Image (tube, rainbow, N blue to C red):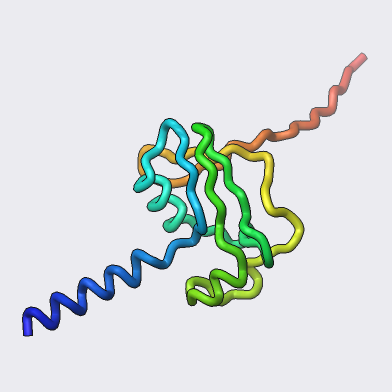
Length: 120
């Protein structure tokens, strides 16, 4: 019974581990492969998944990650919600980083338009 339970746990963990939200990773200089994989798989990428292509994410250390496309995610049973996909962009100009607690941060420029009012 213990052997059967152990084998079941191994296959369950392998099935869970193989459900990655990314198709490839090219490591940079700062983050380990385990850090990248963990952060990517924990994050909610709804709206970043492309209908056909892999969405490219660039990290501050040069790491390059390609998120899986809609077809890949549906075939693997990872995501089924139709409202999470877009067909406009396959990348963006933002740089991503991983915080100390393992969450992904998006470093984006903010355009602040200020109105200058002069009183006379």
